[in-house]
Amino acid sequence: MRKRAAVLCGAAVVVAGTFTAVPAEAGTPQHTQTSSTAHAAELTWKKCGTADHPTLQCASLKVPLDHANPSGQQITLALSRVPHTAKKYQGPLLVNPGGPGGSGLTFAGFIASGLPKAVAAQYDVIGFDPRGVGASKPALDCKPGHFDPVRPDSVPSTPAIERANLKRAQSFAAACGRKYASVLPYIDTISAVRDMDSIRQALGAKRINYFGYSYGTYLGAVYAKLFPHQVRRLVLDSIVDPTGVWYDDNLAQDYAFNDRHRALMAWIAKYDTTYKLGTDPERIEAKWYAMRAALAKKPAGGKVGASELEDTFIPGGYYNGYWPYLAEAFAAYVNNKDADPLVEAYENFAAVDASGDNGYSVYTSVQCRDASWPRDWRQWQKDNWDVYEKAPFMAWNNAWYNAPCAFWPTKSLSPVNVANGKLPPVLLFQATNDAATPYEGGATVHRLLAGSSLVVEEGGGNHGITLSGNTCLDKYLAAYLTDGKVPRGGGEADAVCKALPDPKPLASKAASTSARGAALHRLLGSRG
Image 1 (cartoon, rainbow, N blue to C red):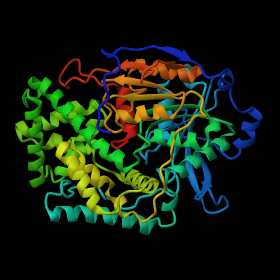
Image 2 (cartoon, helix red, strand yellow; image 1 turned 180 degrees about the horizontal axis):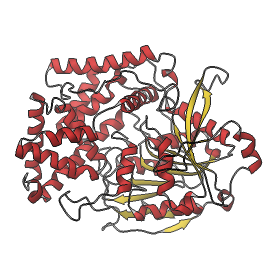
Image 3 (cartoon, rainbow, N blue to C red; image 1 turned 45 degrees about the horizontal axis):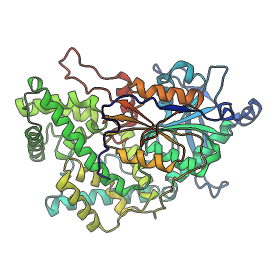
Image 4 (tube, rainbow, N blue to C red; image 1 turned 90 degrees about the vertical axis):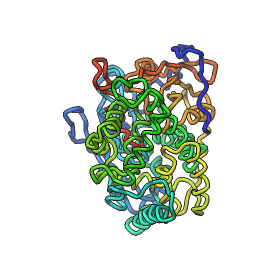
């Protein structure tokens, strides 16, 4: 799982390949206006537009807490919609930003505004807060302030530090169990997928279109497995490896994030005239770890200790648009003993508010319930120290982030085998150097979903790559959503797009990051 993707075609160029279209029948709406109207009474849409997304509408839908007991306790899902405006209507397009724990309400507006107007106009773009999230009820918040600074050092270099971190993980799991004992057995991917089908029915659609990022790719693949004949079009961007959920996938992330952190060090070395941290990436990395050691002893501003420093730089592994800000904070601390930019970077990229507490509560609830985790802490110790020796940057930070699963109060389900030969053509997007969902996940799902097409961003390291400034990727997305066309290549990838260039330092006149890219990564979140 640590193997990085090989270069797919020598130089990173666009491979157009050939196109295969979905059968004509799939290009027409799969429900009549009569059936749509008949079901629409279940949803009452009200205006909830924002300055950025003025046409957004909101509704709520009651679904069973336990889908095996449909007449039992009900919960409420919060939905959003950007309605179609074109005469040609292609049905609902459900969208999900990942997580688990990501809110999808404003995400519908982001997707609708990011697609070409003529394409978005043909769909009702439907966002939703999955069960437990945001405006859905009940919304989970197991232990407010769990990430308040300053936390213990993530690296358990002494028994006392390890005990302190274990106490945090155990107390979080126990708090979830106390507050949500009746709810936790139903906060999982399969339950969320059944909610999605309830949304489909409430919309009066025989089939749905779906577009998911990150964890949303696993959500979409599981939906397609359970409801293959309800899938019309399926787009998955930055793809979870479904064969590793969730313990192995998190270990694989650690190696990939270490690579991305080193890529940041190399980028800083390239701009020594700006940052004055040197021209040798390894020496710059050594300065970063020296900064970490100093902050472990004396947190910056009483907020940024060693663990918070990791939290601050981890988003740089998701999105290189953050690199200039992180580099400036790093340089100010090392060169000028000025901690203020570091504190500001922490507050902008890493500080956890009430929304973050909710997202983390759902994240742990879903991941701990979805699949089995080692319950013997000695297994975590062995595996994470092994990773740390080769990839220290995020190894223990990630371990403690997931450690409540070692003590989770519910039993685990079995992962879903998403292999599927019953779907129309599916479109997949994956960057070769993605850290959060390493390349192997995209290649694996490409094999598991028969007839799928994989578009690769060669050399790209961002997580979430469509609708963030790469026009090559976006043209494949637009073609697929317009008429079902997918590229057909013949190799591991069906099409290859060149990655966008890395950003420039903020002081540079050429400095710029994609506004769409920045907006997307705010919506995906720092652990999207």
